[in-house]
Amino acid sequence: MNPAFGKTGPLRTPIPSPSRTLARTAVILAAYAVLASAALAVVPSAWAALPVLGCAFILSGFLNAGHDCVHSTHFGAAWWDRIAGAVWCTLILVNFTIYRRQHLVHHRFPATAGDSEEHVQFASLHSYLYAQSGVGFWMSIFRRIVRTWQGELPASINSPLWARAARIDNLVISLWLATCGAATLWQTRAMFIAYWLPLLLYPAFVLFFSLAEHFDLADEQMPWPRARNVRSNAVVRFFQWHANYHAVHHRRPALPAFALQSAHGADTERVDPLETSYLAFHFRLARRLVLSAPV
Image (cartoon, rainbow, N blue to C red; front, top):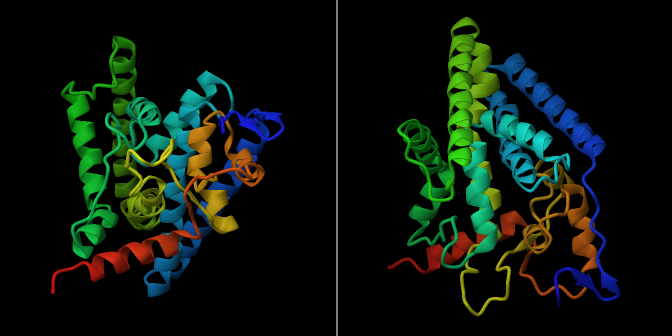
């Protein structure tokens, strides 16, 4: 079936809603403030770990908000989405321009040769756990900051305009780090609990949610777009900007986040891979790696 058409004709593409985006943003930031305050209120109790993890989970959704800005489905205006994307991504130390250009390459070649995203495979349960820990993610983030300062940019940054934008984003990230460092000298406990710890942990959530998107779908026999939808609960859908409907997004990247669930339900002819939940996906993968381990 043509992804632009349903059973009865062309699918209407809802336009981005700035009011919906601002309302969701307000709820997300308020939830983060509440959790951070709760963590500060109970520290040094071990119970502080729960709201800290909640903050890390919320931070992981910032990347999906930036992702929507890549596709101009956040506010629906290029300049506003550029600013919003840079803000969302700077807070989690991601260069928005580089992410944007790399992600658009990924949409051209999802899970095929030429894809800008690595086709991950795991040789063992240990390699899976290491990859999901976020250590490699952070190494990549800081390597990118240093290389951008050195003028080493990925092939997708193929014009002076994009190179300038990437350097500006890198400068903003560096200034943000310097500002947070200064704030930490002033309010060490608050910054450590409310920002640095969630920041350290958020990549584990990003990797947990993103692995299912294309894993094991890099097969020439798999139909385009070689992406997977995942059923999930309302909390995950809300804070992750409905990124669980990843195959729907690849078929219709112009859809704003709030429309992905409806589009998934309306496409009764879909043949995309569908996972019952993120936990089920990871449980089956971990079980497969354990059973395939040499005795």
